[in-house]
Length: 390
Ligand SMILES: Cc1ncc(COP(=O)(O)O)c(C=O)c1O
Image (tube, rainbow, N blue to C red):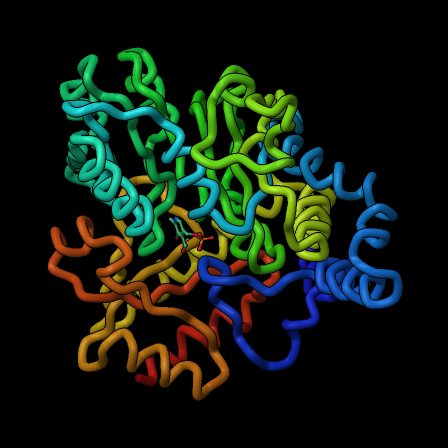
């Protein structure tokens, strides 16, 4: 079991009477993250950014080491970035595409990924196609297998959608796609920090994630994992003097590992903060944290499901820490705002973020409550009572 008392004591944002249920948006960081970021900014103000970064070279290397431990891989397969979208698209724009190539996306795919896929399809003559969902709302594995042929260049898998508690069978889907010769990219933005992510077991070619959500890192952080062969061979769409070396008037040599997908300039303080966040999670015990999140989300799902007029909108068989719902007589935005007036933080997920899934279900928006392990039972109950009172 996660040490709830310790987690709460380590989180300045809890214990104030407020209820925080937006870790799927941007979570509350533990104190060590905020102090790491602020401490480094102070140091930059004292001695300048370059010297300050040089003082922290070991800690900066440790950021990738911590992420690699979490994903069961090695640091040379990790490229740090400023968001999940940056990481996803850095990989995606490096995949060569020709007319007639097929890009498969899932019903729960995130808008930014789908938009990038459509843009590249327009530019290259490739086609974007949707893998159907099964009756439970999960990616349909049989349909995926039937769609595979040698024109499928890339399969985009979505682990946990932004708009609800679904968990997709991504390891099985990756096996099907890779067996047919396609590249597989996994959007793990909403699963990193709340579900186990073992890249060896998942078998994906690339994985993208963000720092500020379930990992409880600073905003403006993210990372890309690349299968080792790709980290050493794939050519990014853009290079600079960090991702490559200028070796002669007409020549350059790319970095030998995933850092070829990074640029030299970055927010050092935020990056150190991300390292602190991942180390904090590793120290707490990821499995305990994941179990605590699941337990809180299950409790909410059950309690909300019993309220008259409230419809829980989560699909799938296995569920994540995201609980989505609608309430009769109030729009999701009204629900969010009325809860905010009681110092309860939830967010609204709009159809524009997950167009295919929300259109298929005839939904414009849903309320999203996403409890992390620092949320106590009393707070969950205060939230449920507030929804009931609406
Ligand atoms: C499933 C999913 N993918 C990608 C993203 C984009 O993450 P970022 O804003 O870090 O680029 C989000 C953000 O909410 C998301 O929920």
